Image (cartoon, rainbow over all chains, first blue to last red; front, side):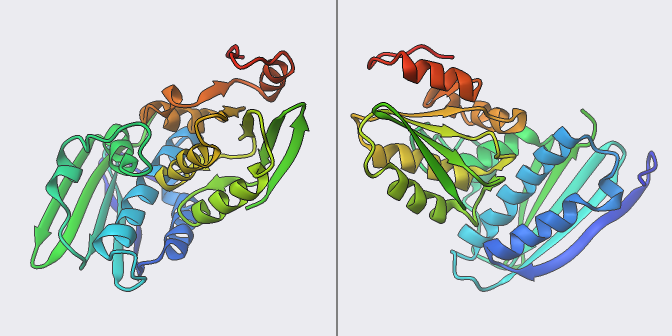
Length: 142
Length: 120
């Protein structure tokens, strides 16, 4: 269980970039004992943030090829759940992580980032040595 | 991904018998929807009461389903769980779909239906 200011790992995993693998990782992460203090509503929001950011890697960084490795680290830190997602895929267009995607409500795509930005306290994207790193902070209490 | 259907006059109610409409299920959902709605002539109401998780791929599948119906037939939703309703609100899709609070409200609006309808 989480203690005040501790910084402790909840989940640290790497897995193949497919939607099916993402679904398994979501399922495992949501029942992690270290997230046991989150309300059901917060867990649902966290699951959505994780789903959007991991599926984004599968779909865009690795261009839906079913190849490549996704790395996920989930940790707790002073009232926050910190998500770090890494991959070796193509660079993310900065407009997606930073600003509005400008999507129309009728479009079939583009909503993932809107949800991530709406539900997270902070969103940070880094491109270092041909690798993508996305760091998300999510408030753990309602 | 199982979809069950009921007819109500000219209108069709499609009940999503699955807890998730997500990236894994989105394509199957679209195909099942296309088959389920093929013979409908009136409105189509999607009963989402069993759904407790929808992501952007699932939302995309619903928008695609709306487009499958074409301009003359409406797709409406009913019985959204709280977190699902929140996802529609955050993505502003609550302004694209007519959303009925309950299955009963959706049925009532179908029963009294003309082309223009009340939000339940």
